[in-house]
Length: 139
Image (tube, rainbow, N blue to C red):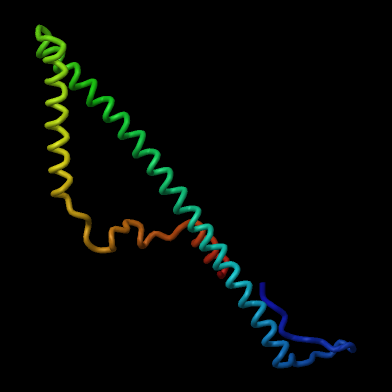
């Protein structure tokens, strides 16, 4: 995408471009670079949004499945341990076990501190595909 900086007159002779012509070419080239940088920023934004949405969907599905498995496991354990007890007792025991698990998780998550270093951004040194593509083309 190199621009021909040599200008020719009507007889075909090479003529040095004027300062005005050179400045016009500089402005046009600068606008092209700015446009490509904006396109790059938009592509990176779309890529990031897609990544975040995909991860949120996977995390949500995993959470739903984990909760279902937990309830099934606790229900089976209570049914086998307290099979001769009343339904009200089994529901109370079920609620108690789940409450203990919830308190344990709440206390456990409070003791976990965020990672120190790059501001919590695990991908701070990651170069997106869009960035690599445009940089490989000289932008």
